[in-house]
Image 1 (cartoon, one colour):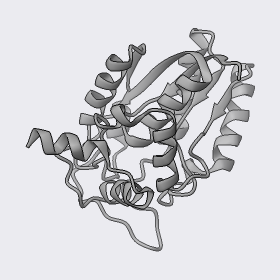
Image 2: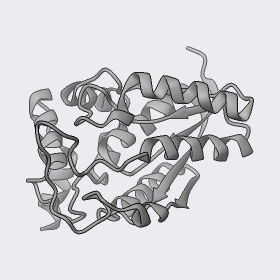
Image 3: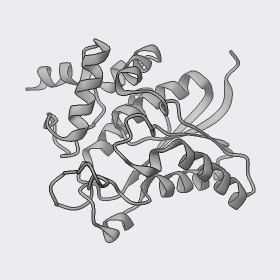
Image 4: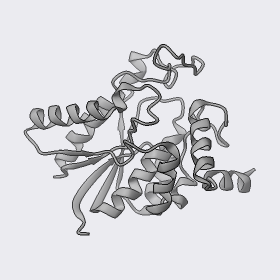
Length: 223
């Protein structure tokens, strides 16, 4: 299969975006990675992103998005406890995050002549986040292309995969070594807390896939 030209990966340093980074390496001749510092509690993920990109020798840039901490009202930028209910969005939802990230990513990509954006959003395990839905991403692609008079394509390789399937994809695209350095825990600690929703979902995915999480192997060597 012929490789496509260039892509920009929206890269948090987490499990899903690390899988997408390696997916992009298989699909494109050249890739860059873009991360966002929005004063998240789990800022350790930015260190994970740096480490992974350095190991893979991928150009990496971190944009200052601290404006999210001024908006407030969510458990990823505030000190409130992480929780959710069956009737409402979990308080880990950051309003507008993916919309703004992808719009900023498109503007950044534009300056490098890049038309392909890759993001790890997923509707199957989307925790109720409306900005992870397929129709949201498709609508945003239309809006970005109209607003920038461009032809961006937003790739979502995990959109219809559950966590176990995304783990199997990670194995297929050779992401396991990088996943050892990825960060998922909402609490922003190493070793990960193991009890927050993100840690539980990650553990469930690896368990159902029948694959050992390389992060756990790294933890066992460090403690």
